Image 1: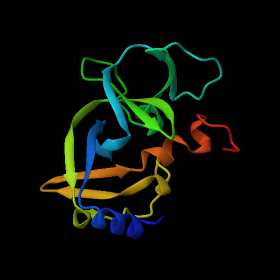
Image 2 (image 1 turned 45 degrees about the vertical axis):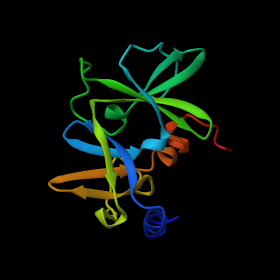
Image 3 (image 1 turned 90 degrees about the vertical axis):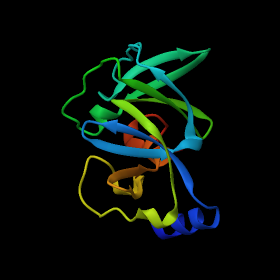
Amino acid sequence: MNVTDKKDSATSSGAREYLTFRLDKEEYGIDILKVQEIRGYEPPTRIAHAPHFIKGVVNLRGTIVPIVDMRIKFNCENAKYDAFTVVIILNLRERVVGVVVDSVSDVMELAAEHIQSAPDIESAIDSTCIYGLGSVNDRMLILLDIEKLMSSVEMGLVPAGE
C-alpha cells in the first residue's frame, strides 16, 4: 500500500489519531491504535548477542517484552535516560514490543489533507516505514508505520521467514 492508498484509506474513514513522541530534536507519530500503554523507563534484562538497539527484555504482567531503544536505532546523538524517558508498549500483530523514546508529547488527530508524502531520501529509517509527514500549525511530524518498522528483518524481532 503506497502513501496515496493510505491517504485514501484515511480519507474514507475520516481523521486518524497519532501518539506523538520525541527522539532528539525530531517529533514522530504512530497510530494510537497500536499503543497498548506508556510506562516509565526501567532498565531491562540484557539478552546476549541481541542487536545494540535492543536493550533487553522486561516482564510485563507475565509477558516477556523486547525493548527497542529508538534513539539508538535512529542514530540520535543524545540517548540519555532521565525522568522524561518513557517506553511505549505496542501491540503489533499479536506481538508486544516496547520502544524507548525521549518523551511522549500528546495524541493528535490528523486528517488526510494534513499528511504529505515523505521525500525518498537516505536515512536511518527505511523509507517504506514512513507513512508520511504530518503538519499541523508549526509542527511537523514524521509518521511511522510502526508495525512495518518493528517487523522488518533487520530489527531482529521476528524470524526471517515470517
